[in-house]
Image (tube, rainbow, N blue to C red):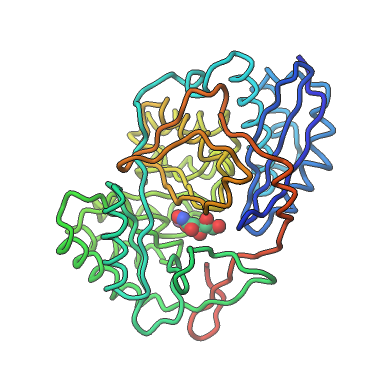
Length: 402
Ligand code: EZ4
Ligand code: CO
């Protein structure tokens, strides 16, 4: 079996997606997600100029060797752009493998460890009251786990809060727009938010919160301790993960579970976090973490240390990634929770999906491979539309993490 061709499809049904399609001499093709929010053309260029020419003529069944060809074989390693490209190649090859063997992807990763995958919703509001209302709405839809983000009194912008009634979407046209941030206002407010949420909704609902890399270890430790009485399912990205040792202080002083790594792209971002048991959930998604081949190894490594998966699943990850993640989570033993932000309806004009939400869980059908298809004619009707993620400054203008 040989790879005969591959192409990159960049389309914008409501938002940008990058999809890799790999063709074989047996009429089977595979799809992989390569979307990296705000950096789509960079990944597309790496794929088109460097990866695709090297793929032609290779045997698509050799997923392990091809992964190492593009990772180990490349002198310049890691980084979100190249790892997203490798992820897409790997995903597409596993899609081909499933189609070739006429079986859904989860059968190749361990079979069925569970029938359905628990997912969490996003609730957000410009004020505490609106956030509470949003939690009620998501609960009404059946979600058993809900992430809560709220606007903060006295602070103009907050991560995770939709502007107007629109869908939450952090990327905006043009160069990055600027947001501003005050950690002390945030730290004073968040425990009050969760106190209120628990008071209104009781103890059964799983609650999550995303700090989005905005605390120092000592600030994050304070927050994790103050949130303890409200029993979060997880506190996400409490500090930036660039310094893995930064998680030690939080861990020593608080029992609030920690999830980290939606911006990670390698097992080497996680080694200290895993071996020292500094975290509870791995956020690194298939689309940015080197695909199925690599993330399976990370998940297996984590399982030895009581760490579970909690993959990133925002709308800037395509339906191909989400479907692959459902297969993956269905198959492994140490699945924790999957993020689920439903795509806008228009996305389904371009992608035919094979998963379904019901009562707080996602299920996937038995279509061979990953099971998502793309309508290229429809895709071509929605051309790439440049957009960037924001940048963030402290109130005095100091550049900060977004
Ligand atoms: O900011 O996907 O937990 N979810 C997140 C996301 C990320 C976006 C960036 O493109 O942090 O909302
Ligand atoms: Co996040």
